[in-house]
Amino acid sequence: MERTHRIEIWFFIGSLLFVYGILILGAGLYHLVHPPLQQFALADLHVDIWWGGVAVDVGISLYSQVLAAVEQRGESNEQDR
Image (tube, rainbow, N blue to C red; front, side, top):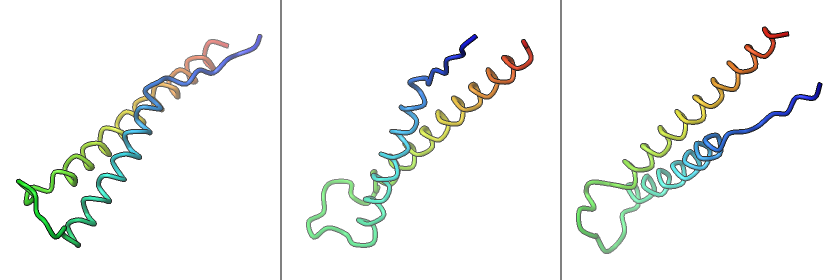
């Protein structure tokens, strides 16, 4: 019997959020160290750092939940044999 392995869409969404979060967080940290010449409204809140951190956290949690579900399915498949 041939077994097929499917990868859930949440794995890719988590990976994408993690990568985008790293990029946004990096840009925010760069602008923190080297502020732009012309400030914009509410620049002192550093929203890019906050959203980058949130995206990284959500990406990691989605990624880890999908991996835990895949491992759990793998263990249940081995026990069924």
